[in-house]
Each structure stands twice: as structure tokens, then as C-alpha cells.
Image (cartoon, rainbow, N blue to C red; front, side):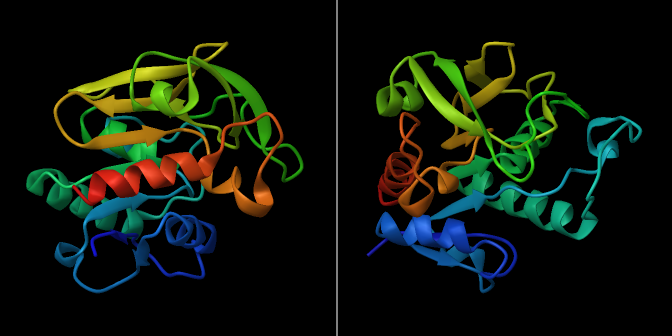
Length: 210
């Protein structure tokens, strides 16, 4: 059965993501040949190298050039093949830059507080995210960078009250991304009154099985 989702890195780095994919009926694949997988998940993490979007470092941290190159190559392969891609937090930023967009390098008011995600409301335009969660919802936040200029072919579909892009879709490719963390809004991490992260993983698995 289809449902193999490729994630660059090792399982012990991204255990929460692997658990969420398994709960949705899929399998997270670490290593091996990506061509054998049905979809690509770009998880959260440190910042992209700013030169990739034409800027000097003005607040970016926890840079990982090896990961940047690997995920860039994976995005190139999966989008060329028309296979589904889901970006989460750093993953959304990677997708935006891959398609020619830029980032705010150090945005106040959205990072975690003493290791705990912030919760905030978002508004959503008609999109897969509005179908899953409605026009108004509550999500979590643990980032200090965000979309500035949108990449080519991308459409922002969800925002915070202060205008930060929280979700985007590609207009022609099966590429979606959220700035928040659905893997930390499910199971033992579920938050009363907030979005159910399992819904997004189940929906993405369904796209990968088409």
C-alpha cells in the first residue's frame, strides 16, 4: 500500500513526525532511495543559509548547509516528478525560498516561550486548510523567521492577526506548507481548542496515495 513519506535525516531527530505519519497509516522513510517514496515531508529545524535568498546573515542561526543542499535536491526531484510535498515550519520557509521567495530573518513575537509553543489564532482562505480546519482556528508557534516575499507559483492562504503567513499552497503542483507544528498538536501533545494535527497528516497521506 502507498504511504511511504521521505524525510531527510534520521528517525531519532524526527520521532514526532514519524509517529504522526504512522498514526495516519503511513511510513516515514529515512535514508534509502527517495524515488521509492510517495511523498516528501520537510520538517522543522534551524534556519536556511540567507545567501539562498540573496541576503547577508542578519539574525539567522543554527545553519546546516548539508541539510539545505539535501532538501533542495529532494524538492527538485519531487516537484519535477509531481509527487506531493508537505513543509512544516522550516519546511515552509525552504519551499518559499526554493521557488524564489525571501524570508524575514528575525521576527519577534512568534518564538517558543521557555520551550513551550505559543498558541494564536489564524484566518484561512478557501484551501485544503480551510476544509480541514475552517476559516478561523488556533495553531501553535515556535519560529523566529517567516515568509517575506512569496515564491513564484505560491499562494498564501493563512495568516496570523499580525499578518505572518501561516500556510501556503502551490498553484499548480501538489505542494503545501504550514508555519505551525501539527506534529505537536496531536496525541499526547494535543491542545484543547487548537487544531488537530492528525487531520493534516491524514489528508497529506491521502494525497500521496492518489
